[in-house]
View: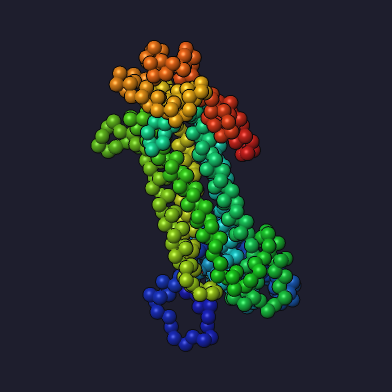
Length: 462
Ligand code: ARG
């Protein structure tokens, strides 16, 4: 492995400490920016050419050198291991000088690694945000497919994890769909502020060459150029925003995972996971464990950690660039990998859930979840709701004493609490009626849910 020279020859007479050299290096991880570093270098080459810094011939040589580096680095992973360098920027420059000769040394004119690393990271992240957004949409689609596969299933809805009111299973699916829809919006917002070109900010003060910053930005597909060079080289808000949006994606996946985990327990029994996404135990032969969802739930913590690490790293840094900022890479890389894998696994799990509709329906009919219905029934017949609530509370107490559900009490027994109760109470207490009455926007009535499902499909444009 060849050792390349430092990027800062002249001022230094002493040798750097070996331990420190290692500590200072980022190439083991920032090599992920290899392709974007070359692309940004190609665009900068055009900027220098346009500014008259590079002749036609020089620009040609640099261009074809960079293209060759990209080709070799893409085809042969070993190409990146052949020389020991500090970071990806020094790697590309060293290779360029090797291929193009001295003219390669001109490429760094009007540029600093400070604007270079920022432009690279923004280019890279922009594309990753796009693919994560696609994965979010794929998970949303998996939720809709699951809802469609069990379109008439009913499950108990909970508050405080106590049975509350029945809901359509599809309504539960759509709740997670909504969370992910907001996540997609947030990722899009983060992308918008990521897609700004800092190139031309140079070290901190801006460049003294007549580089057409906007032209260079257009080559790279940026929407605009940064307005302040000091800010541009020290801004990592875009990383924090991405980490925050990712934290919410993971938070939502983690809540979904938790619901799936409890619904697959024998105690709930609403879901069964297929063997494809469950594991067994090395000692207990009967076990089927939802490891896939537990890992997603567990990994959420890692992402929150990265989010806090980024904020803490940036807090209190003086303007402009500081080496602390190199710590942004591993955090963001790990977020991208972890969130992508979690979204993929979640979509797969959703495709491997069988809803035990009979068990869920049975549970939805028990636990006095139609008590609110009975109170509403009395309120509709003219009893003030507070009074109705109290009367139904007493009816529930009676049913508990008898060990039966509300619908099992005889009409006479019910009427002993209020003579507003009539024959029609039976249908009012039915599961069908309970759902059908929740017919305002956002409610769980079958008609509303069908409407929401098709709106959701349309929003995905699948
Ligand atoms: N590896 C550095 C980073 O990730 C690149 C920028 C280095 N700039 C500098 N002036 N040392 O932040």
